[in-house]
Image 1: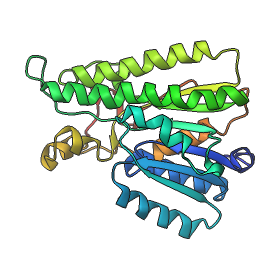
Image 2 (image 1 turned 90 degrees about the vertical axis):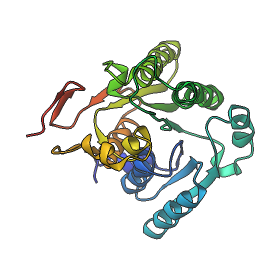
Image 3 (image 1 turned 120 degrees about the vertical axis):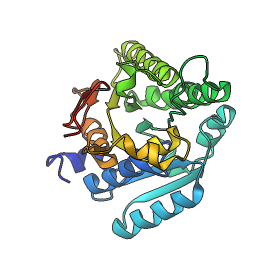
Length: 267
């Protein structure tokens, strides 16, 4: 994909950290950065499934011999380990330019009163606390050089609440509020804060939400053409390869068959 003649130049030699990089939007974003830069980037890919990261790294390096990839088997909810992980990165990967807080999850569609407490804790731990922790640990790197991009994977659930999504919606509203405040706090710097908020995207998301029930997960996208991981990856790469005076602060992205959680055409 071509994002314009200046894109590869602006991305050249950037170091990009992506959480939740073993599948879905995280994986697609790693590939998109390689395609947009002709492989002239350094990728730090984090996920719990290290074997998946190894497969992704093999594919990327076979297509883009110049790309440099560092893998970390990492659970973003290991809050105390983030600082150590960053400090122990190989020297050529330490100077991070772009942080993509992609890791996130929805668990279940139970209504309030029936939601398992462990699901509440898990969603807030991943979607909110881990996101804040990574941002706080990487931000000093950006402040030291007065540049950097923080990309937050939000959701339409951060703008619209819906039945069966009370806790997930609460986490994404939290992400949006934190992101807006962060952008205000950094207004006197050249650090950009970007939120990309997708609607229906067909990834592992629904399988995780429905806890492996493939029939229920499939119904989410039945008779629709949803967004796909690469659609969101294109927007992430586009937003971080604009001129430094341009901040794509918020991007609410729907498939063409959707206008809100409540307006979805299945024609």
